[in-house]
Image: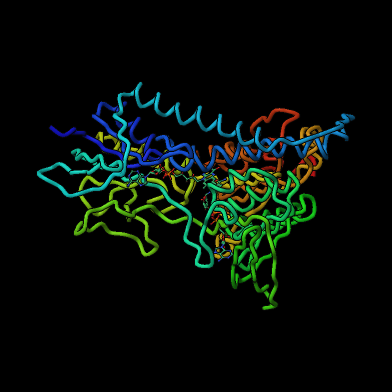
Length: 477
Ligand code: FAD
Ligand code: NAI
């Protein structure tokens, strides 16, 4: 007899594994199918995020930032370092250790919560009576399992790039960018988005000459304009990243040792750059290949995502979709919360997610984080707003840290004072943004934040000052 579940999740990334654990916690008989294999060919849970995304990239960012601090920032503290060296192999091994710890942690959590973990490719064959039939195949091994509900959490993969094949030797996607065995002298990055900036920062700090080639006419289009301007200034002036925007790639040719990229700049002038490695990070696309048997019609969006309503329901009965394969920002925390909410809905609960309050973080130095609307969006939508902005440069904690770049900007409704957006570029922005997310979830006003006692000396005082600034009563500005 084939295995039968209440809920079968396809994909064990942050969307899928959280959905599976939550469903099991709620008493539903749950299985999770995942096909990912790590570089040594072993099944490894956790999806893109844990294996080749969020977690390994943050490990490398930390290692390279420590090196950069020792090289350039310790001297100001009176610390002299001589004979400073960097061991790329050790950095990669540390990163791999963190990945193994966390991916094995998911296997442990599955066991603890009695989630059946199935390794292989999941494909929905059809529905018999009320049960979806799902084939799980791992090489020659095939089994069909049945489930009342199926949650699609198959995530995403790098978007195809017409000009070049990824070989993960010279031309790298996000997986290859996390495995470069020695510091490339000249590193090219196509796409100055989130991966480009994070991975470009890692290798720049370690000594690569890094050039980012970005097609969009504006740098960091999704961010608030003031933040994007400050980021561009710091990344180019202080970190030394070379960022070309508004470019068009003409051709990419790999030889045995290097990669030649021909591109035209915003004025149409042709340029040729030669790199030792080239990272291609031009966005991601949903994973839907081989997911549905021929004849099964699942409604997709124009951009190729599985179409869902606000509850994660797809056009097929009892089939749900969460995370990167569904519309919305491709972020691990968005995937996880959707996974949890879908599991609860299947169990008969009425969870609610506020998609207006999803925090964004870019883990560069300084970090960038925001929640809510940008100033340019408010202008475009004709919403009257007031603004408070406070720099980190006079903040006592920032001075102690030696991290003086950046600011906090708060935008609040001109009529009601409700906070509409908070934008931070500066030290620990990834942690600071949590206060703004809570404030916005609870529909706080800028005055609410202005009246909350913030610890001194702390970076959060910059948020306090930005809130005071909305009423033009900043104390330290
Ligand atoms: P995934 O994590 O992609 O997991 C999907 C899983 O399903 C995979 O294991 C896949 O192999 C499996 N699968 C696919 N199809 C099938 C099938 N048919 N059968 C069985 N298994 C299948 N987000 C952040 O919030 N913060 C960050 O700092 C961050 N950093 C990132 C850095 C990089 C380099 C990258 C590439 C991404 C980063 N992201 C970050 C984005 C984040 O990784 C994704 O948003 C998140 O992983 C999406 O989760 P998911 O569960 O939807 O899918
Ligand atoms: P992205 O969408 O952030 O950036 C891709 C960039 O490539 C864009 O700026 C785009 O204009 C540019 N581009 C597209 N085609 C191009 C071309 N032909 N030539 C030059 N430039 C081109 O996508 P990215 O960096 O690949 O990351 C994918 C997703 O993963 C992100 O959107 C984000 O959701 C997630 N992610 C999140 C992180 C975080 O939360 N800190 C870190 C890394 C990734």
